[in-house]
Picture: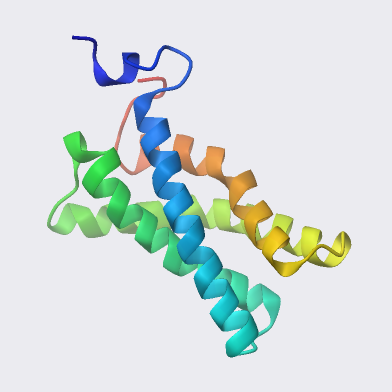
Amino acid sequence: MLPRDKMIGRVMPVRFILFSMVGLLSLAVHMGVLAIVFHVIKLKFEISQALAILVAVTNGYVINNVFTYRDVRLRGSSFFRGLLSFYAVYSVGALINVGVASYVYYGMGAEWWVAGIAGPIVAAVWNYAVSSVYTWRIPWGA
């Protein structure tokens, strides 16, 4: 039997596919929080987007730790150090996310939900590559 990362081929590792699936779930969480905070609570778009990012990132870390990186799952105090590492990695992704989303919303005049989706999509590749290496200590290209 082929190793997990070879079953789909050399083009796309299984771990990236799992990470992307968790990302889609986190995007749904992100959009739900964004809708509630922006439309119901009526906070400014940038604050709403930032809060949605925080909730979605925490959600993504927990699920990725259980499923995507189960072979190197972080437990105990390592779980919390990993979460802080994940936050650090995602802080750059979050800046990319908020910057892109704000540009799409304000600069391009797109609907809030289009801007809310655009930010996470642009930040996704950065988040995967850097969190794999720094949070779960997966060697680059493995």
